[in-house]
Image (cartoon, rainbow, N blue to C red; front, side):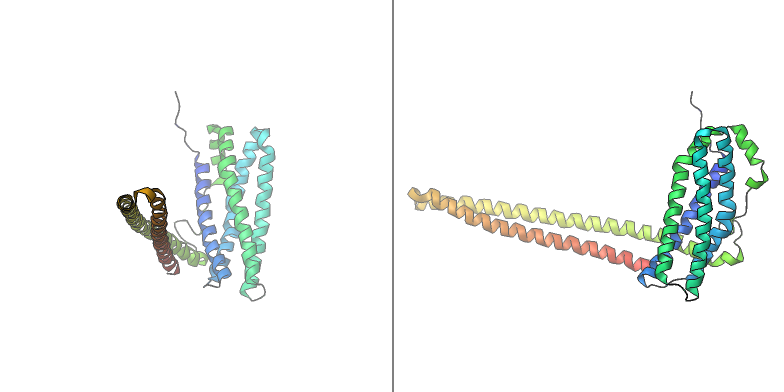
Length: 293
């Protein structure tokens, strides 16, 4: 008889924090995109993001992961090397976060280029996302398999693993991160709005595309039927008029009619492609308009 798996609270907390960090990375990506495209950029929110990563993620989230990983490594030597690698990644991420925070500060002061910030920022986000994905897919399941309920109870009593108030996603937002929290709420709202608009625009485009394809199909069938009826009628007339030479004359006439039919079909296909392209451009324009809001 199978038993229902219950996720340990500490792992559930780490996973929830990963969701928060992913939202932070998404907002940072938006700002880096704006720098790259020459759009409006909130340089202060970029600095706040790195302040959050340095002051909370690297000082609270990663150390708690290290404690749990260390406990698992004590019980299973097979994952000890992986745990050591992850802990070294945490150290490297902390150094990179400090370096990026300093670079953003210099950029805000006019002593670094936007290209440098974009390049370093994208590298930082990519490394962070790869690290979290590895933890989510590989590390957490292995740790859950190694640690027993008694191990988890013991860990939960460790003062170093007690819940720490999140300065951005917690019940109260710290003053220094209010701009960041506001940007995150706005980004989340825009994502929801964009999803709704995209769904409606996609449905509208699909219906219009189906209508266009249906019309094209009817026109093509009509043209084909007209051509066949014309070929039969003219062939009968040729046979009645010149029965001895009817065969080659009918063949030549059919070639002529086929060429005309192909021209009509090509015209229908061209108009259909143009209409579908117009619909796709209109949908893209609607999404671009929403992104600009």
